[in-house]
Length: 140
Image (cartoon, rainbow, N blue to C red; front, side, top):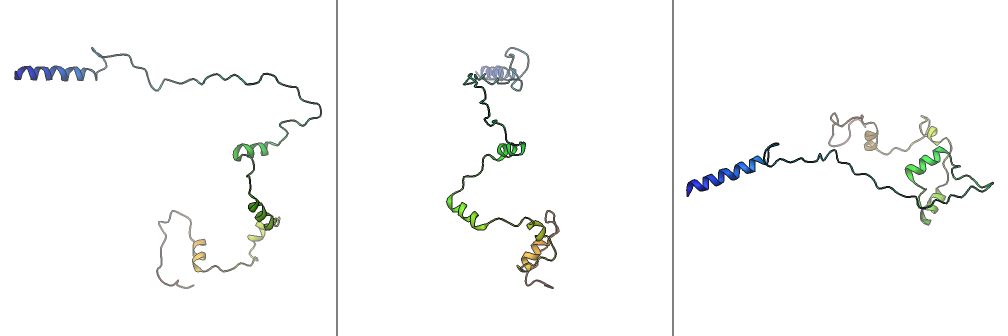
């Protein structure tokens, strides 16, 4: 009885292990899952009746390439609520040379405190060289 259980186990194990091999009784031709490619279905255009352009009508592609690129990237302009439109209207337009004026050394600024100054003059990097000081700021 013991020999038959051991023999049956040995035969079962050999059949299971033969399935792992590439040749033998249980081998089969398997498809390459990386070579399989799904083809997109063909789409029939919905309308074949193209109408000729009207004389004097604006061309459909009269916008510049910059406008077309912005529309492709960002879509049409945002739908603003009335509150947003009112706020933007109250803000007004900025001066044309505002960026040059802000960078001018003669521009008057408001002191925001030592913490803001320290953040603005902090060295660039990933922060490995950063140090924290506890207590009142020294020399400030």
